[in-house]
Length: 210
Image (cartoon, rainbow, N blue to C red; front, side, top):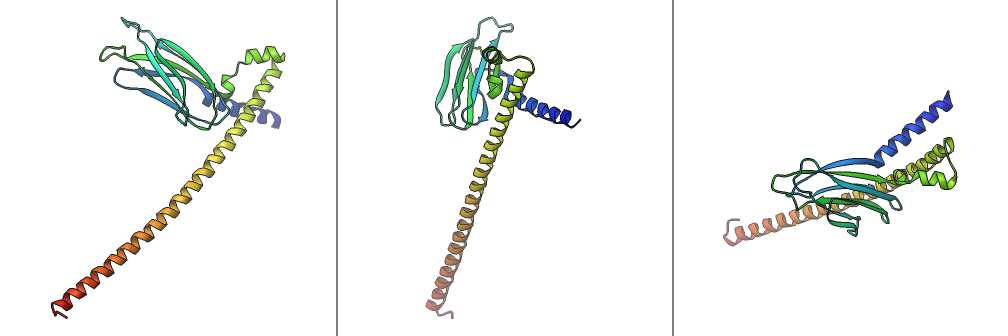
């Protein structure tokens, strides 16, 4: 009974992780705006994506342009005026990876739908090729998937822990800076008050009011 519950828990966690790392997104594109999506990905993760325009009652064949950039601003993929495309890369640095899409071939007020199939990590692996190469099938293949998923979840938790530590350090550094700024502002206010009091006293003495 305990083994069944443990297996169900692992399967549930794996399903959650897979769902978070793969999925299709529909974007509505018009000539007036650029649509972008981003995902926070750690380093050394495989990313694959396919995108295509859904032709629905359009008199002309619309084209789309795409640009994918890394957290440092490096261009990982760029395409101009295509009806479909794909890209794949392995992340080098951790951070937010941005994919932007826009179109310039539409008439005013016209909108097209773009289908984006975005996959990362284990969801981007070609399990059919791996199964043939390693001669795996059935339970053996599923165990390999669970092992890879568990490793990926562990790495993701370590990454989140590292980000939490960085945010905590940043918060503490900001708090120290704000404290010092408050002390400096208070010292300036006290100094200005003393100066004003001294000038007022000098004025009264000059005019023999005191």
